[in-house]
Image 1 (cartoon, rainbow, N blue to C red):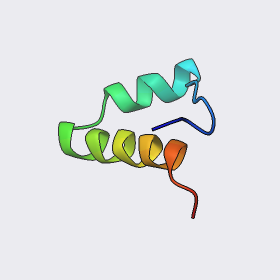
Image 2: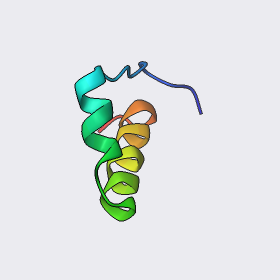
Image 3: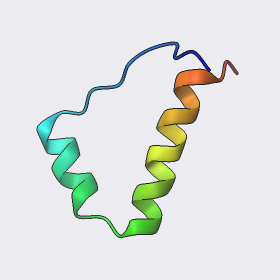
Image 4: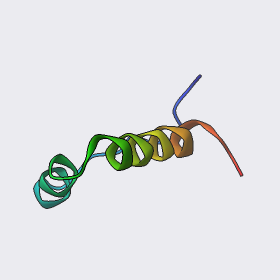
Length: 40
């Protein structure tokens, strides 16, 4: 699938995500990737 846009994380956001547990982090990444390819 083609991406509609590219996501770049700020260092603070990256640090925040690194401190999350695996399950919530995975869900956030899943939703970000989904938003890049799906038009609602």
